[in-house]
Image (cartoon, rainbow, N blue to C red; front, side, top):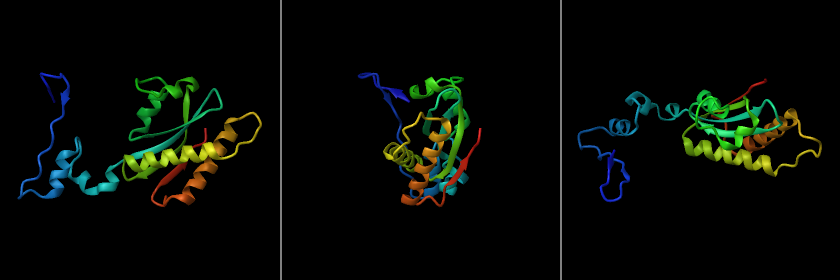
Length: 162
């Protein structure tokens, strides 16, 4: 990465187009940092994007997010590593409630996360004092509704009991 003398901003080097004799698969593998040609050939399997639902141990609150490395992300939410979301700082410690794996790319995972949150917000809730059980049931019903709207047969959904 080079710095521009005029603006002192970072200039990201661009990958050159493949040479006429170089196969396209090898060219795309060289553009993805840290990936081998075997991983690039796998395509969907190499992605690793997942959507997760975590539940607070202290207050009746849940959080839905997207990541490629869930164990690291959970440690961030719990304050063990830098980078946790500000919205999750009040409910520490957090526990995994649901992990959904098998997304093709970040875009698909983010779309799923957004729709899950949106359906959860729009669904009617019981008027009583919220408990963790009722919150998780609410999220599970929203997920069931989302599964009927989207093609989710390729996703692996795992609920975890705490």
